[in-house]
Length: 106
Image 1 (cartoon, rainbow, N blue to C red):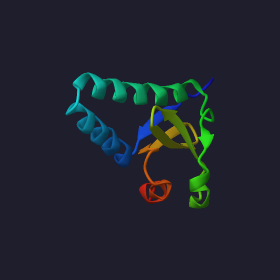
Image 2 (image 1 turned 135 degrees about the vertical axis):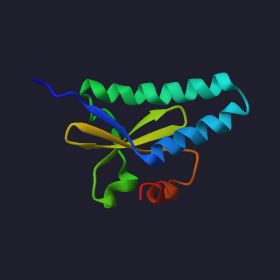
Image 3 (image 1 turned 120 degrees about the vertical axis):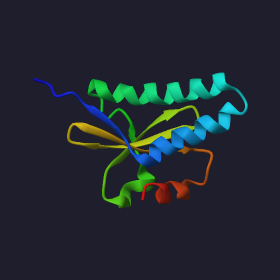
């Protein structure tokens, strides 16, 4: 029997989604909703057992966990695998300073 993969959104990742939504909602609700839907759908791909589909995030190698990421438009969806769970750590705008990513992951 195959165990179902559970997606867990960290508080940081949930906050990131709200920030992205709020920023784009000022411009267009349609764009804001589309971005959030796209990000969440990308994460849902991991539920199908393809937990290693994302590339390893080399900027976070020294953190002690193996972090991976998926890309949706300009955003890196940083996650890690923990047994039968995927923990979404943060949604990072890749146009920012890469060193900021290290600080965002705790």
